Image (cartoon, rainbow, N blue to C red):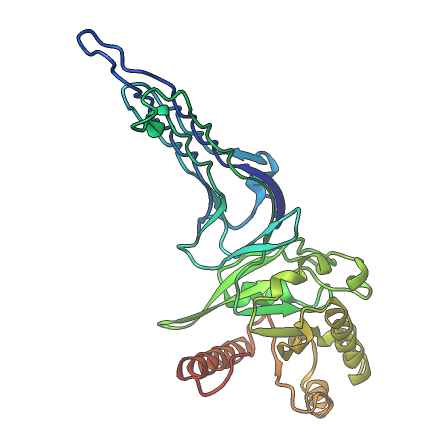
Length: 347
């Protein structure tokens, strides 16, 4: 299925049913009086979370949704049936905007979220409502009010604890394959990842976290070059960023620094405080270096990073991956404990 993370839809709530103009006419019932009933309320339109969905692809084919209108009132004081509400299923992590005003209407981040996006029309009143001691045969009714109509823009931001950053072919997809059951495409050419991938990492019997992989970034991504900038928004919900660098493609620490600077520049230009997020450096493909070169790189990079956590792994052989995953789980647990006790502010 094609990954779609943005969609525009039109929703229309049901109109309220009209009130009825009717008089009771029965044999042996003189001057029966007004008996027109009220109409029914129009159906509302809701967005509801469906955890079985992971894309907005369904909205490529159907973009207009309308709830049922209320039934008109009837004689004998019969009230019209209210219209059925309409539930539209969306994935967890969907942001809902009013496309005309730009207003954020809701953020669907809980499995039981149900957001009212269009209110049904109010029912009309039948003439029985207007009878008084001085007006015993009213001919007045009111129509039902129209239901709300909205143009909505839906934007999916995947929910993950950890996000992966890096240049094309840095080994992000290989890493997520090595530590989770996710199976993104892996090949020896750039941009094998064309849309975000999620993987659940089991770091203990009752411990796990979710990793999000996005297409690789290249220089100029913030201006629309390449694919990664289109999906950077999916990292805005993550708590930790792993910057993966292909150490085997670096001749020296200067080329490592250039790779790091390229990514830092792009996420800074992207904005949304992504460059302020906690970030660790992960040097991948250590299996392609001999022990002497690796040790030289290790010492130089530790000095260069000046306090930033640095890990050396091989996604192909699995070397160092377990240590990294345990460190991530420990960091996430620590942040959760701080948040629960209120002794600090979660980043």
